[in-house]
Image 1 (cartoon, one colour):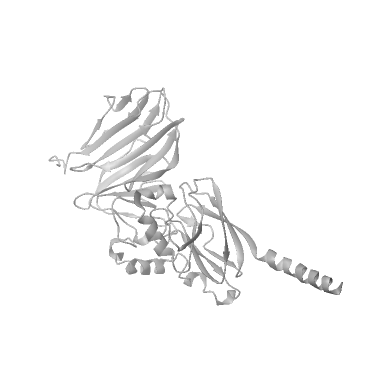
Image 2: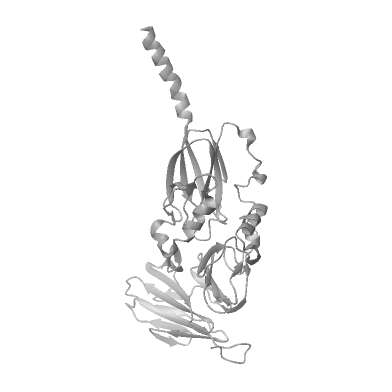
Length: 365
């Protein structure tokens, strides 16, 4: 009997300790490519569940890596190219310990793993996110030995991100890694809403670039001669704007360009997928699904915008506000002054927007 009571008391003594090792923590994606928590501290041998809420307007994931493996995982995720979306931008390497799926705005996912002693980075591996959007989980009994947050090399910090840029041999370009075009950055751009997506396109003389406003589902402007300089953005606080590198040749000054029937629709952004590294944006306007893929002109300055529509019986129209030097042609429909009328049932339209005037004098070919 005494032996039984002794075994029972030992078992009961273990229950509170085990309960302490099971921890659930809420973490969110917020505006400015940020996690709501950047440092999490738990005891060793904790069975940790992170409940990930996406409160941003862009899809994200949450990937937990082995110690000192964040940048390696991010670089492997970038190397996935157009296969990334189907894999939730998660590379199949041992450095990935656990991860959520791609979490769309307003949705939630969770990830559970057991952590022994050590520091475990977590990061969003979407293209362009992983060098800004990250944090660290410490499994330790000795909290006093952890560095102060402003000195923690595992948390976003201006000085540390500049150091990372030098380590990638590309600080002078404003990028923390060798850049390959097409490239996509979720960042803060001048003359654009907070949900800006900068896209660099390949081509001669630095290529071309444009910024897509995910909040309004439209291109805001396009430029040539370079991409962007993110030097002041890597601290990840969102209080500074990314710099445009090159000359802006096109601006959309007319607001959301599409009409469904006779109404001005409210567009809702649904994310994007990469097709051969080019982003194809998805949004819905008055129930009509739209996919927009943008590529550069083969010659000269300009964009080729391919719109693919879901089924609809309504007439679609595109408002093109005239701009000096910009000529717009459509594969389908006809222009009535500044309005392109598209027949009902059309599933795809290709708009070619070409800049034809240089300094008001000559055509660029």
